Image 1 (cartoon, rainbow, N blue to C red):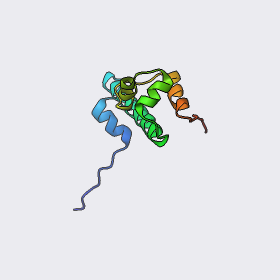
Image 2 (cartoon, helix red, strand yellow):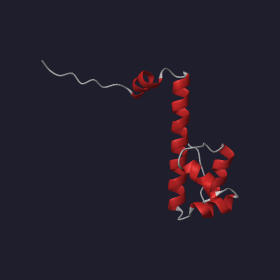
Image 3 (cartoon, helix red, strand yellow):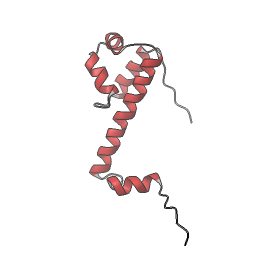
Length: 97
């Protein structure tokens, strides 16, 4: 008897682990994921620009600890603040189809 491969879509895995879209567990997971990815994007951009957390904090009039909390996925910056941080690193965000 051949062994069947049990492949699942990502949505099936998320549904099984965190519930259906809109459930409190799924919403919490999605918010935590957004925090993590936003932090990773900011950290990568900051390091690519060769800027320290302290320097970025100074440029944006934020505290170093606030920058650290964003990069560590503890908080999600507002869209406006995210643009301000990216702009302080000399970058632009563009949207495309």
